[in-house]
Length: 477
Image 1: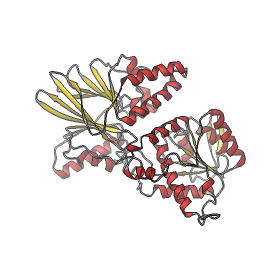
Image 2: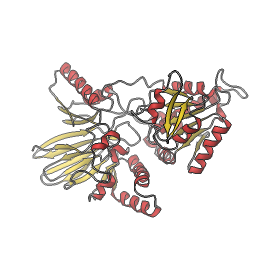
Image 3: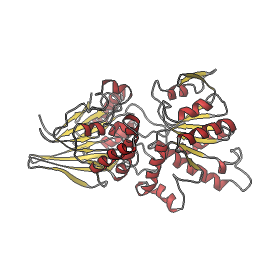
Image 4: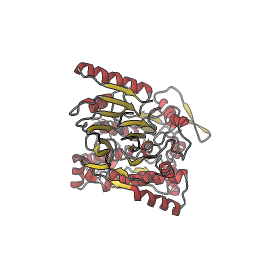
C-alpha cells in the first residue's frame, strides 16, 4: 500500500458520521473527526457506544468542529482505549465539553458526579491549536506529519485541516475540508481556499445546488416578523443550539437596533408593529444559552464588522430584550403565558426539526391558533415534524400533524426563510477546490447524499477540463 492513505469510518453513506483515518505508514495514523452517524445513516453504523473500527496506531484526533456528526463518537473512542491528544481550535475547545456534556446527559447519565468525572477526563486530552500555524504531531524516524488549522466559516472555531506528510524524502499535502461555511456569515471570518493540496477530502452537502442570495436575509427576516406581528401573535423559530441560533440573535439585534433609531418617541415606523422596543426575544434552550455565552466570550474570533458593534457598546448576542429560559418549570410558564395572553413575542427554541425539545411544547400550545407563525430558517429532513409543518405552507385547508400521539390542526401561518444555511453551496465547494494556489490532483468527496456527490463530481471534472488540468475525482462510499 502506498502512503499516505485514507480510510473512511463514516460520512460516506450520507451527511453524518464524519470520521477519516489518515494512515502515515503501516503502523501510524491520525483521525480527522469522530462523528456520530444519525438518521438513516445510523441503520448501518456500529451499535451505539461502539466505535466500529480498530484504533491501534492512532496517534491523535483532530477535530474540525463540534457538531455531533463530527464529534459524537468521542466517548466510544475513549471506551475503545484511545488516550491521545484531541487537537482543535480555541473556540472548539470551549464548545466541545458543552456539546458532549449535553449528549452524555441525554444518552448515558445525568448524575452530576459522573458527568463531572467524564468532563474532567475529556479536558485532560484537549490540546488547543492556533489558526494558521503549523504544529508537528508525529515526528518519527520514518515519517513526519505537521498539521495546520484554517478557518472554515461554518461555525465559531470550525476549521479545515492541512496535513503535511513527509515520508522517504517526499512531502504530500492532504487537506480535510470538514464542513465549509457559506459566504457572508455576519459573525465569522470568511473562508479562504488552501494554498495547495495534493489530496483533498471535500464535503458535498450542497454539491448539487446553489443557495439563494444571503445579502438580504436580515431584511427578509424583518419583513417576515413585521407581517407576523401585525396579528399580535408569537413567532416560533425552531433552531439548532449551535451556529444557527447565534446568527439569528445577531440579525435580530441589528433589526431591533435599527427600529430604535427609526422610531420616534411615542410613535412607530409606518406599518410596523407599534412597540418593537417592548418585544421580547425568548431563547428557550439551556444549551443554546451556554453556547451563546461562549460566542460572546470569544468575540475576538468574530469578523471585523461584528467586533465593531461590540466596540460601539452594542451587545449583538446579549441585548436588553433577550430573555433566556433555563428550567423546565420556567419554560412551561412561558408557554402557558404566551398561549393565554396572546402577547406578541419571538421564540427561538430547539430542536431545529421539531422532532423533540422545547419547541414541541410551543407547537402544541400555538399551532392551532392562526395568530401565530412558525418560521423555518433551516433544512427540514424528510419525515420529521418540521418537514410536515413546512409542507403545509400555502396548502389549502387544514393539515394535521401528530405531536406526541395527538393530532393537531396546523392553523398557524408557516413561512420558510432562506439564507441561513451553514454550508457552502456547489459554487463555494468548487471555488474551495480549484481557486487556491494550486488545485489538487485528487479529490475525494464525502459528507453528502449520492446525488449531491455525483453532481459536484461532474462540475469539478467540467471545470478541470476547461482548465486543461488532469485530476482525479472519487466518491467515497
